[in-house]
Image (cartoon, rainbow, N blue to C red; front, side):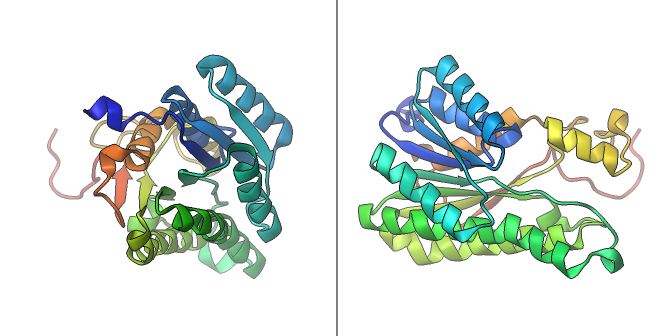
Length: 261
């Protein structure tokens, strides 16, 4: 039954960027469904508070591991800590990411590299380390969090669009290489998701936050919880024959054409 396929009891999940927004919503939902959860991000105090809330509200164990996912040693330590504390890793959600928008001609080399480190290298490092454990167990599910920018591109985000597109191809190749070990890898491309940090970034970028859903067919931005629903589905046994895919959670395609109103 579907209910059984969405049961994570006895499983262990790592969620990077798990202290806020999409990562927090995902970690909380996994915990609600029975998983032990490890959340990681740089902000130690905020991360610990998030872990405490998840544990208190779900009754599941939630471990906070402060981690700079751009640092190789830190990623290795994160995966090892999860194994030491829980004895296994069943799910890896590479959610950590972000950008600073700017015209292509003004993006410094250091800024370009930083965006790739945060959005691609971090996923590679965590996937490589967790994948070795999953391969030994012959099972595992990896979900990478991309963006609509990686599908359509976005002006002012040449580095971010390129990085998120790279993450999608990384997902495809991971699925192709590791399927023989029983490991699935999928990607979720986020549209306009109204997390607190995203909303603040929209304001900084000069977007009209009161009208941000006007070009979205469903007429509104999405929520972190709506992203979490898809992420958890892809990590679950309900998606046991889904791998190598990028699925957009974006409220529908924004097309040109004739006015319909």
